[in-house]
Structures are given as C-alpha cells and as structure tokens.
Image (cartoon, rainbow, N blue to C red; front, side):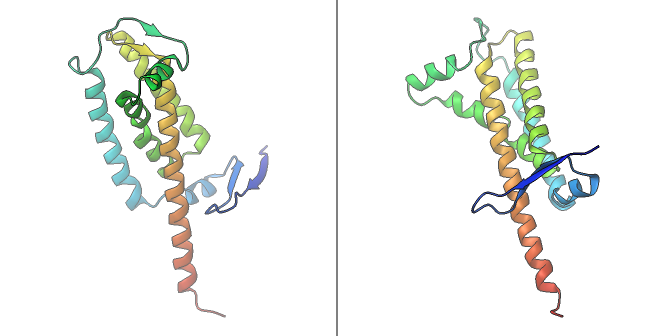
Length: 174
C-alpha cells in the first residue's frame, strides 16, 4: 500500500516537490531526456575515473598518520587556519555524481544515501591503502554530492518548465 504525502511548494520555486513514493510513470517524468542523460553519465564516469586516480595516487596523498573519527574536528581546524583548498576539494568531489543521480531520475533521499555510501567506501579504501581516514571527508563529500543533486533537480525543474512552455505554445487555442 502506498502512502502519498502532500505536495510542498516554496515561494519562488519552479515547481512543487512531492514527497511520496512514485510509480514508474511518475518517475520517468522526473528524468531528463535521453539526449541529456547519456552525455552527463559519460562525463560523470570519466570524472569518477580521474578522481579515483587522484585519490589513490601515492604522490598526491598524505601517508596515514592516524584516523579522525570525531565529526567536524578537521573542518574546525582548517577553518581556524583560514582558507583551505582541501575543504573545497572534499566538498566538490561527489557533486558531479549527485548531479548525475538526479538527472537519471533518482529521488533526492536515495541520491543522498547513495552518495553517503560512496563517501564511506572511499574512506574505507583510503584506510586500506594507508591514507588518512577522516569522518569530515565523509561529511563534506556527502554535502557536496547533496549540492550537486540539488543542482540536478533545479536543472530538471527548469527543463520541465521550458518543455511545458513549448508544449503550450504548440497547442492551438480551442
């Protein structure tokens, strides 16, 4: 049995967001067209391969000196010492993947859970190859992926609005 929640609309938003479990037909309406999905997926795959090479390249990483499992400790230290390139890089690492999840029609909640699992897998892999493991990296990676997913949702909303305008312009008045 399916339970549908009310639609929520924010002032100035491009469309209303329904927090319910959608049928396959409703899910297909929230996806970008195929001409948009495939190039985005190919760019995302190339980006992921490039990111993995950088993540596990021994010349770019810091050898493991310990692990940090205290949330926000590293973030606080880096903010106290001024601008940190690492904060920006960790935040943007999964943004393209979050964008791709949404363009392919994945619900925001499922996209964030998937991004969290990817971030945890990256940190586990870094522990295996003797790199620093930090819970703050998981937090920043997931947050950046969330921002990418939100951007992907905005692109889909804009696309739906433009497609709606195009459809209404083609229908002759009755």
